[in-house]
Image (cartoon, rainbow, N blue to C red):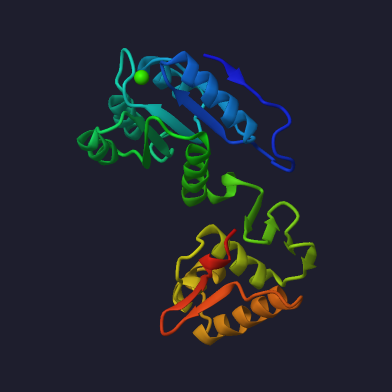
Length: 245
Ligand code: CA
């Protein structure tokens, strides 16, 4: 097992997510490790299922890329055992499966894998899936600077930009935007936004949400840009996916 720190990586990351790669094909491992580190993550390798379990026990990874066909202990069994341990119960797992193993995929997802990708796959797609899974399960870990179209927020400094323009937001508007960016395209009702941004159990009138959405919108389109927030009649609000680039 090798714990490799890429150095460099994406600037501004406080703590690079640790990715456990379990793959017995040396050439694919090299390619995976190279791309994962280039993305700004740390990578730790395991060449069989037994090693994967040992490595995961030693230092809990933030995400596991797990080959289905592994020597000693199969990928599916590794997945099952990781799910059985308290420390790794919630660690996202992306399984790598061979083409056409439709039944296996279903079993993989049943066993607790969060996603699967069929070999051969493009690194771009795997990295996109990794980001999606990390963002969904552990938003804070996914990235420090998150963006949607030309809107970018820096979670370390809480600075928001649209293109080259700096946007000044109040804390509530900032939280709303961050919440939307974590779930692009998803429609949130006013109640869901209240829970997510103000916290559950806090009594705030649902119309308060409209007020803050209005402020957020105003700030985002002040430079004459397109409105990125979609109002969904009688349902709520969403980030307009058509603006995603
Ligand atoms: Ca394999």
